[in-house]
Length: 208
Image (tube, rainbow, N blue to C red):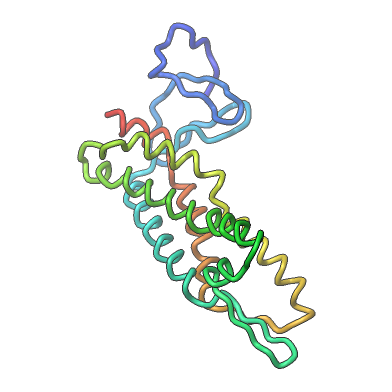
């Protein structure tokens, strides 16, 4: 997109870059094409055909994987003949005292917030992909979903685990459980979901 004088254009025909605040006049973008900010190269509009159905499918898959990953063993550590298995849920509630609050906060960042964000996304897109009027409070739900995006830290948790496991590799034998691979898969799917998501298209659908 190219910058131009936008003083005489209605607000409904303008779009602002979320990173550098540059303002542009909205242009018609064909599916699989992109409108990009000329200052910081942030993608502003990127419509895709049937992207809503794909996002719902991916979000549902992530929700299933999160629930399963919380209950199944995440990893097991074998040191000195002793073996200990741990899941995300049992580890979060195994701390006592001041660490209890910290473990619950971590659980919220890596499990609760991602689940809430994806649930809101499915709620918003469900009626849209069926060509029905938006659900009640859909705009507010999508706004909350976008506000939660920076606090959804499943990928940060995955990177932290990778670093910790590299350091523990010399001290004990580590065996990855099914939850570890589920968590790895859901991180990849979350990234794919964000890449498919065209926020401008969703807002336009909700306005309609």
